[in-house]
Image 1 (cartoon, rainbow, N blue to C red):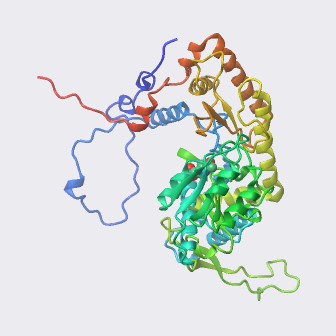
Image 2: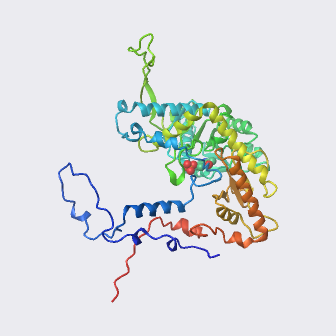
Image 3: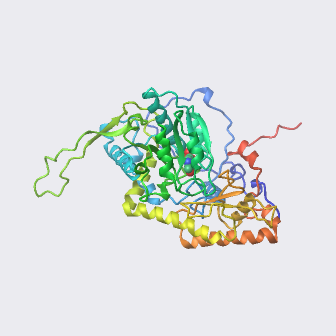
Length: 511
Ligand SMILES: *Cc1c(COP(=O)(O)O)cnc(C)c1O
């Protein structure tokens, strides 16, 4: 089999399509403002644009879009990233003109519907996690983390407690946790995991002193497990005067099962683009709301939505009227009194708020709980079916994801990467590779709650088939993927010199 490495051999560039005069003339409406010549420095006589008919343009880009793998094309078990489906109704609500065509600088009196939605979402997100307040500002999980850690810093500073310079971070934490802590100016103290994948309590006790500002812990951890001593951990950290940050990016393992606020956490962030089904990665901007208890509420990033005037009884509603008995309250913007400030222009990624609101609204309390039960069931189903084929280093009931080792004693040349690349030939997106760092040849797998038993079975069968191939024909794995438009890339080069657009380089005229 030939290894295809050059996309150009498969797909023509748009510049190779069409011919002079082929494109339809632009149909612009008649100009309704006075025409002004463009400044000369912005105009050119010669612009080398392709002239392509509409149907050829559409076919070209639709074809290109199908070369890429996406959650709408197949199973996407990317651990720690929750690539679950994005309900199409979310797109309908986000496109309602009353939401989509708002301007962020509009006066609050003209945006009451949007503010009501944000207020409700703040309230729901606070309630779901057992917290007092919430800010929708952060634009990603990592930014939510930064908000939470800056709030912890501001809290200690506000009390004049300036000796707290450390944040404790378990070695099973998401990589953004230590990055966030040091970005906020703290020294990161890494805590080891014990043999069950929980935080080593002795190490924690040793580290817990009055220089600790707090602890950041990912729940469930990136080993996919829920720490069995979470209450002890919280008690120890609180005992030394530190605060507890929960990385709740993957709350789809805990919805309706555990409220972090009830456990004693002080602050956490959500990832709306994981737990609440808004598009992820290249598919859309993220959103990482941060929720906290009363103690930290004054420090939330803002402004946040608040009720400035309670709803009054509707004077127009008669006794037998079936219209609302109460007028809606008046919503407005409020900067929490000791706010760490603004994290984002305007009000966060509002389109994501609409989508998450829609998802929560559709699911309701029971639906949210079912999300977590299915997320945990699917991960444990995959674990149980694969545990005899792949080594499961922390083999216990897991949360929404499970980590396997992508290596075999009797096929020593095979690495996790080979297995992942081969999965692409089975039309499955690779799981997360080489993370968490504390597992050799890690394959971190999250089926998600939105996949059927059949899809999980199909994945398990592919993983078993690859384990057989690893012994029988290891070269097949080393050369994989075979069925994709481009085969194995130099990943370092691809990351360092990402080429996202094509440029036509004209050959210098010869002679
Ligand atoms: C995805 C993730 C993050 C980071 O979220 P981004 O939106 O990518 O910044 C942080 N922690 C955990 C556990 C995650 O899974």
